[in-house]
Image (cartoon, rainbow, N blue to C red):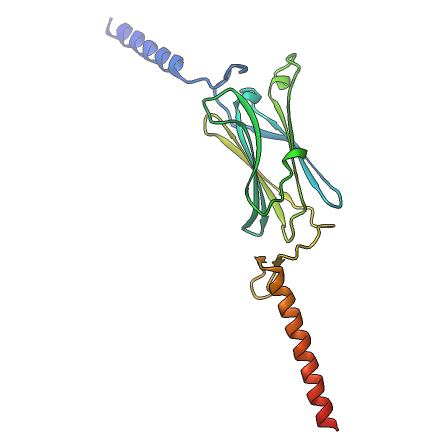
Length: 215
C-alpha cells in the first residue's frame, strides 16, 4: 500500500513539473520548449561604396521568438562599429517595430537599405522558423572580422564570426593605425594635414642647411 501511495505521489509531482514548464512559442509558436536560435545561411555582398550582410536565422519556436540581432565589426578585439536589429521594443511585446540602428560607429549604417522578411508559408516547420535580416553599411576601414549575436525572448542566444571583406575597402581619412599599437585610432583630418605640412617644412629646411654646408 505504501509503495502504491509513493508511486502515485511521484507521478503526480512529475506531472506538475512537466505541465509547469514554460513554452516560449509565442503567438506563432511551433509548440516546443524554448531552444536557442541558429544560423542557416550568411551571404556578404560588397560593392565600391556599400556592404550588405544577408543573414538567415532559424528558431524552432518560430521567427516570432527572435528578439534582437547584433552585428559587431571588429579590428582584432576592438569593436569599430555595432549595428542592431530589433524585431520588438522588448521581450514581452509582439508588435513588430523592425528597427535598424547604429549603437556604435561614425554613421556607417544605411537604415534605408536594411531590410527584414519572414517566412510566409506555413506548410512545414521550417517555413515558420526563418527570419531574413539584411544589414547595409559603408565600408569600415581596418576591420578584420564580423561577429553576429542573435537573442531570443527567453534569453538564449547564438553567435558566429565571419571574416570581414577587407579587399576593396576604402581608407578613412579620420582613422590611422600607429605601427607601435597596430590598432586604429580616430584623429582629426586637420591634424593629418598639419603633420604633413610639418614634415614637408622640416624636410625642406634640412635640404637648405645641407646645401649651405656644401657651398
